[in-house]
Length: 301
Image 1: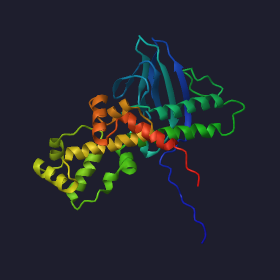
Image 2: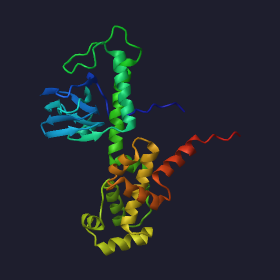
Image 3: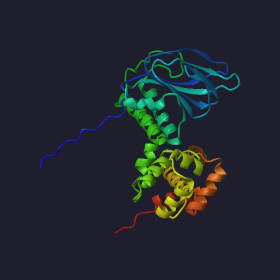
Image 4: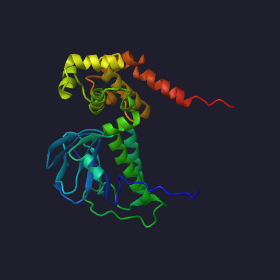
């Protein structure tokens, strides 16, 4: 049998990089603004910055990032009190998935910050231009560039963007952790409700919300889930959220406070109580048990 190749899709492709900058601004810095026909993101590494776009005015704090789609007007300024450190990267990418980043304020996880650090380090290897000139419009490559440096820049940037899309979309939950997508149930209504819960797993839902949005009576909803899963719908939803939290702990991209916020809990204390109630362990105990398991020496055969 002859081998056959598999054509792999490129859901995200960065074709060009325009600028990679890391600025340490004064507390009175102000950039008047611009438009250009490529993407740009601004991330705060330290301090606070204010950004004005076509859609409004935003205040960014550490690790927060804002993306500007092509031809979107944007400015940047310090708030007059703190001297912020800002990372700005601009690039060309025509992939449809970039629509995800429009009109959002996001936050880099620890893993994403690490990738961003690799981008900055590789830019220093690649470019002779200073990375701290906010007005530089054309970066100059070094006369001697380490092998693969230019390729790594685009690969790291693509990795960063892909990682963020996967982390922030519920599709990542459904595909990676979604044991609930394959729940054995004879009820189409129940399957639809489970899909609804998965799409809203980052929110705080009441039984009234679930009933109204799925056009089913409260008592009928409870009866349905007790027959299928021997628990009420809110308990089912709570277990779904905690299972998602376990996945996020294993992935080690967010700390417990970030996971609590990401999943819509009112406080880290309530999240910890719910985690302990439904899993029998605190988040710290669970994380430690996973770490111990992963580091356990393999037995010799």
